[in-house]
Image (cartoon, rainbow, N blue to C red; front, top):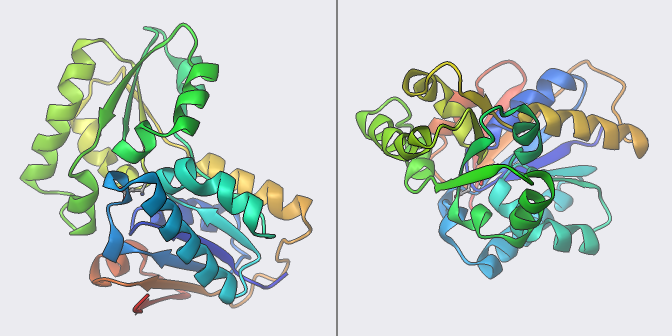
Length: 259
Ligand code: DGL
C-alpha cells in the first residue's frame, strides 16, 4: 500500500527512529511531524501531552497515513493507550528498553536517562516492575537536553557538562547499561561514548521500533511493495534548519508549516 507511514515527535528527536525505519523499510513513504513549537513535552502534564498527541495524530490521519509511529517516549507512555482505543489505524510506540538492559547487565545496575514525563508515567513504572525484577534502575531526568538538541547544540560545552552531571552519579553506582529513554538522545551517543567507560553499554529502542513497524505492516497487509520514487516529507512548526541538517538526503523534503 503506497499510503505513507506517519511519524510524530515533540521535535527533531524522532528522526532517529525515522532513520531506522527507512533503513529497514526502504520501499515505504513517510510523513514526519515535528511539533518543535511545543517541545519539550517532557515537562508537560499528562493531559497536555495527550492533547498534543491527539492533534498530531489527527493531522497525520488527514494526510492519509496508514500507520502511525509515536516516535516519542513521552507521548507513548502518556497517550498511546488512548490513541489505540480511539483511532482505527495501527500505532507503534516507543518505550525505554528496560527489558534488554535487564537481560544484559552484569552489575545488576542499570541507568535510565529520560524525560520527567516518561519517568513519571504509569506505563514506564509497570514495564520496569515486570522486567527489572532484582535489578536496580537508576532514573535520571534529562532536563535541558531536548532543548539543546532542538537548538542544534549537540556538540556544545553546555551539553557535555550537563551529560557529565547526569552520568557521574550513575557511574558511582556502578551501572554497566545506560538506557536512552528519549528519541532525541541517540544524537548524544558520540558525546556519551567520550564520558562513559567502555564497560557501559548504551541501549536504545530505535531498531526494535523499526522491526515492530515491519511486523505490524505485514500483519495488517499494509506493506508497500514498490520501492521506486519513495518520498519522505518532514514538517515542522518551528525553525526547519535543525531538522534539515538531520535528515537531508535524496527523496527528502522539509517544510515549515503552522500547526
Ligand atoms: N523525543 C521525546 C521523547 O522521546 C522528547 C520529549 C520532550 O519533548 O521532552 O521523549
